[in-house]
Image 1 (cartoon, helix red, strand yellow):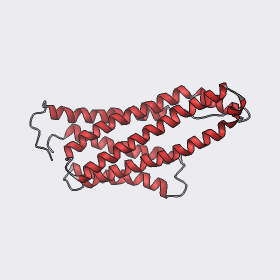
Image 2 (cartoon, helix red, strand yellow; image 1 turned 90 degrees about the vertical axis):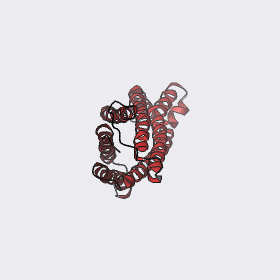
Image 3 (cartoon, helix red, strand yellow; image 1 turned 60 degrees about the vertical axis):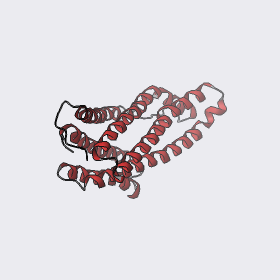
Image 4 (cartoon, one colour; image 1 turned 180 degrees about the vertical axis):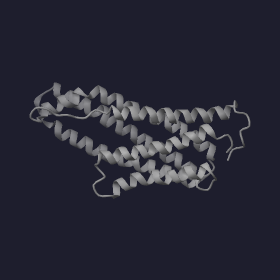
Length: 231
């Protein structure tokens, strides 16, 4: 643990509050982006042409949502690096938490690129060239989303391990640390349940619930960073 921070205006105290505010702002913006995530609506006869038109029509919004989420979680990772520093990077569980969260963010960005940019670009290119590409679009998108599904599982697993590692470190503390640690145990169990319980793996409500639980845990971490003066 670091020494107590006596001066609220000190550089270390400012860094704590700033990290907490980044987490708070990022969580709020992530909610807004999720609420604006477009649905893919294929009209007409569900032909490859209709499919290309559907993806092309929402391409800009998909780029905004997924690009925004990628940027947000990059900042969240930086803020959580500060959180890890305050817990003590000399502790293996804390270091593991930061490492796995960073790995998860890398795969989340990869998923954002696939769903937010690659799918729309592929549809737009196939819609504007020869018929063979257009006809192959459903198959190409199926492969892309199969890869996306695997990528999503990796970043969710990495985040679960990260939160479990931080929770292990927090549970050895007192008061607020232990409370946040208990919340972390619940948060890391959510994605595991999604993959283990039959019927939840491809459930959008379950996916959104996992994100909501992750958001609540991040808010508890932000509160610690903003309110706590001594570590």
